Amino acid sequence: MKNITVFFFATLRERAGMKFTHLEIPADATVANLKTILGQKFLSLNGLVESSLVAINQEYAFDESQIPVGAEIALFPPVSGG
Amino acid sequence: MKNITVFFFATLRERAGMKFTHLEIPADATVANLKTILGQKFLSLNGLVESSLVAINQEYAFDESQIPVGAEIALFPPVSGG
Amino acid sequence: MNPRFLWGRKSRCFPQSLEVELSDFPTIALITEEEIDLNDLVAHVTLPSTGAAAIFAGMVRGITSRDNPHETVYLEYEAYKPMAEEKMKQVADEIRARWNTVEGIAIVQRIGRLYPRTPTVLIACTSPHRDTGVFDAARYGIDRLKEIVPVWKKEFGPNSEQWVEGDHLPEVLK
Amino acid sequence: MNPRFLWGRKSRCFPQSLEVELSDFPTIALITEEEIDLNDLVAHVTLPSTGAAAIFAGMVRGITSRDNPHETVYLEYEAYKPMAEEKMKQVADEIRARWNTVEGIAIVQRIGRLYPRTPTVLIACTSPHRDTGVFDAARYGIDRLKEIVPVWKKEFGPNSEQWVEGDHLPEVLK
Image 1: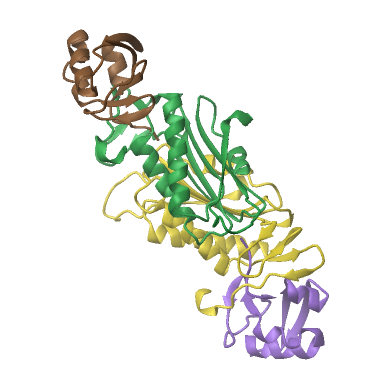
Image 2: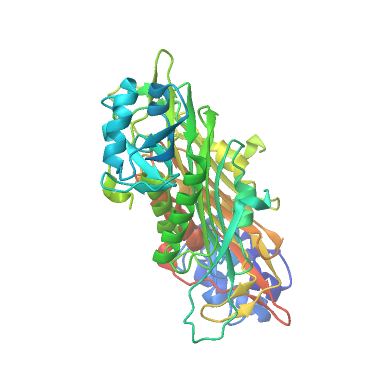
């Protein structure tokens, strides 16, 4: 198992009801695994977390990406700045 | 004969040594005629006045353009603003 | 900005048969000896319907590498002010004729003695969105200003001075 | 501007075999809650060799006519600030890789509650001349910011509020 921090932004922050959380996940967890874990832990994120964007240590990551120990993860919807 | 005012800008102003002058020109004078008159009256403008741009009452005019009574004429080199 | 510099607001062209509320679009066309204030000028051409501004600013180059490499200590700008401001309004009209989504337009040329790094000219065009030509409109504006607006500059180098030569293209003046 | 926002000056690429004086080019990549000061930002990316700046400013539209016409009372912007500023630096790097005449680059996104007519975002690119892609560089900058920089906005209308949906295009994020 390893510890990570997950930040939520925009819709995901509102639906999760928090800005971030600390999690323990399996040592070999990928981004896809993390999404499943989050969907189970935060029922309010169900249906939203699957399609959200993910960043690991402030760089975009994708379903197959491995999550390093102590990673800073961020989940958020497609960006809409400007 | 008719009276006009001629303004000089940039190189032409420096070469003429004045910002403007009042002139009396023939009633049927065109821009081409005016350039000849100016070249005779201001020897310092010789060789420069022929290729200069001309505006009549703040609108571009060309060699064949007629000059109205009381016109405000301007002579200047190709523009170089910006 | 002094309101006398905010010239004739131009209405967008609607079919005359349509009863529509005509919006007014601000146009600034100005020769000035004062500093060019980008914040102020952009604010003056920003409407409640504006979402995008494309802005060109030209500066005095102190060091020129292209073509004829040289140093510039300062430039002296002079203008035939009333005609120049009329020609700037013509440039604004031409922009609106080509890009009918453009809302506000500011065209400002600063004159007098100007040192390197100083903004000398500004073209700002606003529109609701960025994808309907507003960048092209600003580009057209500065290209056209350099063709038809009666302004000249004299360049002062470390050991020389000379008038900058414009291109002689009478066909673009009409 | 606080100098901590003036990030790693980037040198233009010269062949390594040439002994040349490397110029430094300023890059500003900034998420801020403060007003966007165009004069200040453009001054920070203007060098003695600069003759042209192409600038894009985006504003809050109070009235939108296209697509889904509606009124906006204000927008609330939020950002993942450290990643957003890194992605802005990536946008600046991409610009320099595509237009090697670009000198300074400023990319600024304002966040917080912003009302109609307020500038929310600025992209400024400078270069010695206006005819070597500086307009395209600024256009690329705002397009790319809207693709990869983690910023979101929630729109508050007279009787409603909703998050603005970005396009889901994972292929542009890499």
